Amino acid sequence: MTVAPKAVVLGGRTGLLGQALVADLTRAGWQVEAHGREDADVHDSAALEKYICSHAPDVLFNAVAYTQVDKAEEEQDAAMRLNKSLPALLGRLACTGNMHLVHYSTDFVFNGRKETPYTEDDETAPQSIYGLSKLAGEQVLLQMNLPRLTIIRSSWLFGPGRGNFVQTILGLCETRQEITVVHDQVGSPTYTPDLAAGSRLLVEKGGTGLFHLSNGGQATWCELAAEAVSLAQKPCQVRPIPSAAYPQRATRPAYSVLDCSRFTGITGIKPRPWIQALREYIFQHVGVAGQEAG
Ligand SMILES: NC(=O)c1ccc[n+]([C@@H]2O[C@H](COP(=O)([O-])OP(=O)(O)OC[C@H]3O[C@@H](n4cnc5c(N)ncnc54)[C@H](OP(=O)(O)O)[C@@H]3O)[C@@H](O)[C@H]2O)c1
Image (tube, rainbow, N blue to C red; front, side, top):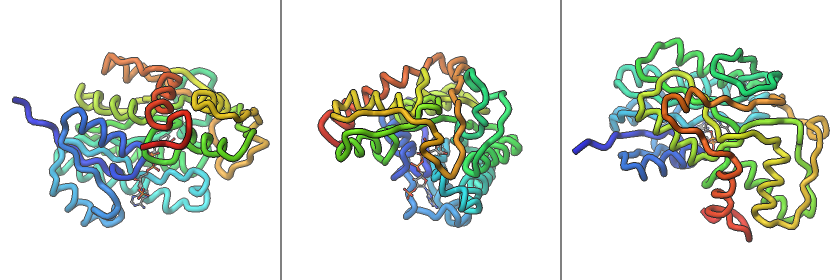
């Protein structure tokens, strides 16, 4: 009989991705410890070390991050602390505890000037503090030369358990007959249960290093919104607008579609199209009548 692997998922209680990881790993028969703020303060290195070591995981998943892209422009120190210093600490703990560390990064490490999908070898050039802080986290970990490190860049997450773009759009449709959404940013929407399952597969296959993982295909925010509204059968018009008509503090890449062929090469899995994953999310978790059911 094989022993079930043990995992600690930082951010597993409340994070959008963290909850999906806990659900997927549990379903796959792993022993999973879902971490929340109340278990150990991620800024208290001694408390965090004690917490992680007490569970002695084989794999440590880090789904904690500073993810407020616009707020990060004014809170650079807070973003750096969570997105760079925390991964550095986890890298040291993973090394001494002989754990496989799985860490997440973002398409926002790119400047968006390419017109074909970004590979892991493409040059990074973040346009925002959030992107800079996430890139710093990648770099600090890669420089440690850990024997078992997997960094997964993903993009445009949606899924059950926490607020996300799709949920926001459907919520707006409750009170408006028309919404406007930017149509000049193109990316790869990603369903968190698919990202979680892909992360587990990578670990099971011994995939280490840097990977891109998103759902297949591409969309603009407007296309994603329109598809969600249509699937949820909301009586709401979705109208395209340029980014210039919706100013945000942080600059987003105009194009950030991710090439996932390195992931496919290791796992043999080609991520399914985002539109198929969106259908599953809306039909299983949101329903056509109202808000997310859970
Ligand atoms: N969301 C996206 O579209 C997207 C796209 C590309 C990459 N990513 C990356 O994917 C990973 C997961 O993102 P996500 O969207 O799942 O994040 P999320 O839903 O915002 O969750 C972040 C997690 O970090 C925790 N956290 C934040 N600040 C904390 C603090 N000061 N102390 C302790 N815990 C704290 C949160 O806990 P509380 O709930 O208690 O605040 C939550 O569990 C991140 O590395 C992110 O950069 C996300």
